[in-house]
Every structure is written in C-alpha cells, then in structure tokens.
Length: 241
Image 1 (cartoon, rainbow, N blue to C red):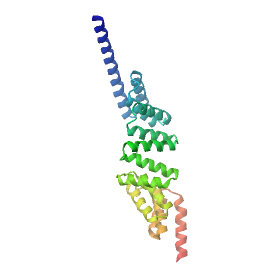
Image 2 (image 1 turned 60 degrees about the vertical axis):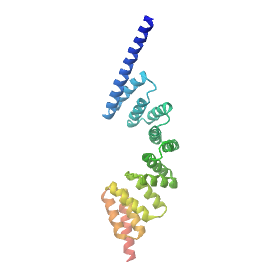
Image 3 (image 1 turned 135 degrees about the vertical axis):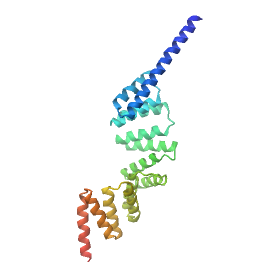
Image 4 (image 1 turned 180 degrees about the horizontal axis):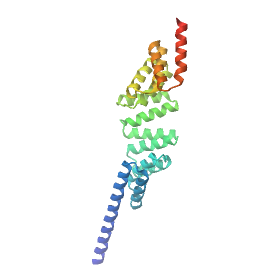
C-alpha cells in the first residue's frame, strides 16, 4: 500500500512539474509573440507541444507566428491541427482561411470563411474578407452581398467600400460607385486609386469640375495613369465648347 501511495505521489509531483513547464513556456511564448519575436515564440510553443500535443492554443499561437513570418503553409498546418482538436471555434476557420488565401488557395479560403460564418453569422471580418475574395475572383454578385453585409455591420475597412465601388462601376451605376469612393476617402484620405476612379465616375455623371479635381489629386499623389485621363478630359472639354 505504501509503495502505491508513493508512486501516486511521485506521479502527482511529475505532472505538477510538467504543468509548471507548460505554463512557463506558454507565457513566454505569448510574451515573445506580443513583442513580435516570432522565432523565439515558436520555440516556446514547440516546447509546450512536446509536453502536451493537444494544447489547442499553442497550435493557434504557433500558427500565428508562422503567418507573421510569411510561412503560410506551416500556419495552415497548425491551424488545421487546432481545428482537428476543436472544430467548434469560428476564429480557427477564419485564420486558416487567411493562410489559405495567402497560399492562393482561394476555393479553400472561401470554404473556411463560410464555415466561420456558419458558426457566427455576425463575423464581420469573415464577411468582408470573403466579399473581397469574391471580388478578386470576379464573382461580383456574391461579393456585393458580402460587402454590403459587412457595411451594414459597421465596417470601417476601406477596401470593402473600394471593392463595392468597383463592382458598381462594372454595373455602370456611377452614382453609387461615387458614394462608396466618398467613403473610401473618408477612411483613407490619400488613396490615389480612389481619387482616380471617383474622378472617372464624376466624368460619367457629367461633373467636369469634380472629375478634373479628383484626377489632379490622384496625379499629385503619384498615380501616373491619371495624367493621361486628365489630358483626355481637358481635350474633350475643349471639343465640347
């Protein structure tokens, strides 16, 4: 009996020591991550996972480190390991989607963004990023729906408004496009592309002065293609006189 008790106590001590090591390495890894020392953080989380290979948050943090270092394949692998251990967290699918998108796996990214939204239908980042990805893929109707949802949820991420504006341009709805470019420029006041494209919208609407003003602003911000459009605008104005 005494030997069994002794063995039991020894196991408790060993397990307590392991838990203490896990806490040490995990806390160190978290600190290194926040200090952007990703290589040190990865070593810390490696040590955590040597002790407990089912520690979900260690996989998540290590994946984030790999992502920040541009090691997107390793990030995807770690997010996948975390999902295998806990497939109920929307953020895990969202973050794996980011890694997949960085790897140009757009179909896989869309699936993971969609899974994140299934778990949380108010997941703003998932709607806006899936919408922008749909826009890049040329799936404008799906993109517009997601981007509008993100806007209704209160996004202040200017690429959302820019993407929807460009979709409106493709539909020749220049007034709506102009309104979205207005919002882009409230959020990013030196966005040369937004000035350029809003200038083109003003031209289509028949607002010469604002078109000229926007194209001049885009040119002043270093957007060279604005010069050609500005010259064409001025030439057309002379011909109309």
